[in-house]
Length: 366
Image (cartoon, rainbow, N blue to C red; front, side, top):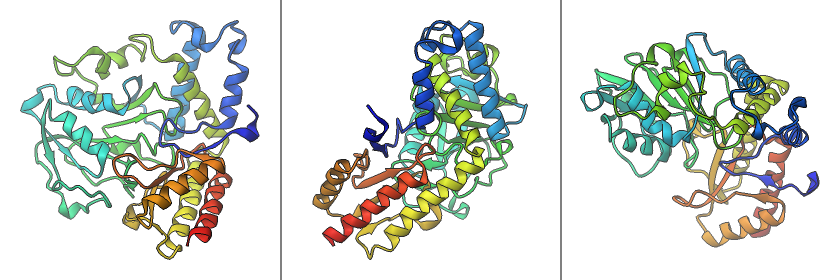
């Protein structure tokens, strides 16, 4: 397949990977760095793979300015695995302990539901079926004895993103950054734990990054399986078992690509340019395209919208978009509509192709 025949992929994950990364992986597929074999064939105990995983950790630490008092772990199980890992590692007494959860969408809701199997969960805001904003702190009901405060920085399904880190000082903050990590600078020192599935901004599916403050790397609950235990992974340099070697290799290539593109500040600038251009078109469409998300909380990476709440028009939009070379624009099955996910690998020029298509579609279907 030639470059020209590649589709523009607006998937919410697994998402598009940078073309230079794919090309390098292609070149190194059969013989990585003179080893005579593919990375997929390397022993995870080999010196060659040891360099790969250490380089990936070093580059991630550099890009995010991770303090030396934090461990970087390469785990598996995605964000869903971390929904269980968080309470199992941070609440060794399980149901004797309490955790605060700020639910702003499907993924934080699922995290809270999973945690209920292990600890007392306090939902800091009342349950709702509509997720269109981040409730202000004045509406939160925090527990004085919570073991941790949990939130999802960017909800991919509903398109709600926190504009800033919640001001919670009474306990460690745990954050799911799966869908917006490396899209803006982050003060790691404000967090107890950050985790991110790689398949949106970091690489392919299969590896999960966990950044955890050292004092929280302790003996977990007795029922915690070793595959989810931070202490086990920290003590074994993420090599307690055979890790997803090829996913880590690709993650490392993505990190080097981000560095070459201006680092996190470079990603922040392109993220703002892409999302703002799309939102401007939506807001200036005279109601043809509709976003129901509070403007202060609009996601920069996942942009859901409706077309006059007209299912027929939306199906036509999706079909014509695919014919124009743009795929994975269908909204999540739970809410419908359209969703454009514009993660780091998608550049401004590519996002503008969607915008031009949206303009043409509106003109033809006004």
